[in-house]
Image 1: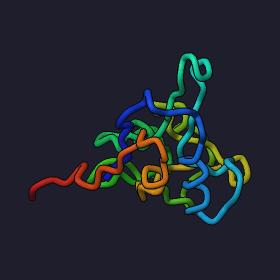
Image 2: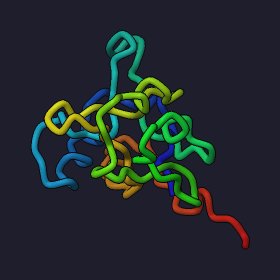
Image 3: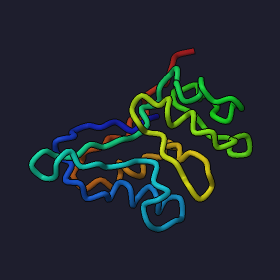
Image 4: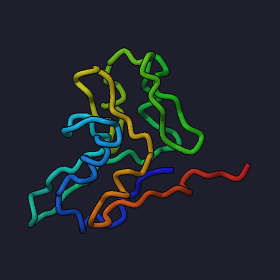
Length: 137
């Protein structure tokens, strides 16, 4: 499973995907979002959506000195919070800038691939691909 950016040109920067992510976690505000929307120059130049791409060989996990990022068999990682020492190596290693930092816990905000952001995007920018990573065994 992973979130895909289906049609980036449709993004209007409303940040509803970010709000949905945070609400799913039981928080308010945007600080704990596991997805981000950045302006590429406003309405004229559009917006960029940053979300974990569920890599099969995630560089974030490869640089973690405590193995706090467990590689998922279907792509991406799971954070084992107790093992995380807050080194931020994962943030630096992510090739798509989709590891966000929670300054309150001093740990990364890692996408859990729940699809809530995609389900709540009113402009159909995002797509929740439930089939991504399924491998025949």
